[in-house]
Amino acid sequence: MPRSMDQDRLRLGVNIDHVATVRNARGTAYPDPVEAAMLAATAGADGITAHLREDRRHISDDDIARLAASLTIPLNLEMAATEEMLAIALRHRPHAACIVPEKREERTTEGGIDAAGQHDRLAPLVRELSGAKIRVSLFIEPDVAQIDAALSLGAPVVELHTGRYAELAGDEQAVELRRIADAAALAAKNGVEVHAGHGLTLGNVAPIAAIPQVRELNIGHSIVADALFVGFAEAVRRMRAAMDAAR
Image (cartoon, rainbow, N blue to C red):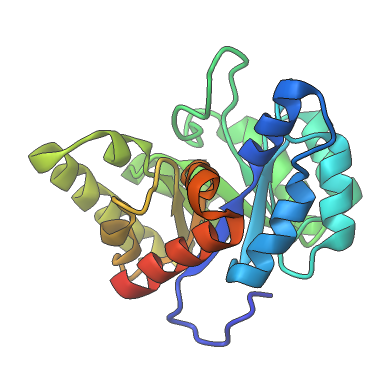
């Protein structure tokens, strides 16, 4: 469970995918994403997120096995809604599994999964993961129909996609922020735990972190990018501090 007993503390899940991206660019054994996960844990992360993509473009099967064996903080496995990924999750039993959309041609996850349109496909996965005591999260758009679908599926957690918020500015960003806040309030009102993530940086995280119903942020790319200049542990500490200040 998360290290803090303070129920109001916003948790930080550090996504280590792009440590693996750097490693794979040269086909070396370094930098090791598992080492990054350990540094993140000592620097204030409450959990580690890793996306095992179908094309294995960054995180590998071996990374997941080593993370599952080594971590003392929760592992959140991001996974596509496939039988292969279900089998991997059931084998390693991470603390949580976040079901995300996945397209081979995309550079990174481009939006939330259509839980409403894929209800019948997702239902057996949610059921099997939950039966294995893996906490299921659905990565969705901040939309009423998607939250209703998550409720229907019995998912205990939703992660709201903040990518559009991160790309906008000014009044348009304010409108998207309100949409995220309204979705968070609706989900929490119905007993669903709310997480958020995608595109969050030191420069834009505060308004999302200030939403009282959001319990966890999952952040990776900006932490890895900042680590190039200040080191990985310090990059995690700075994000942790920014989140705490906003809360």
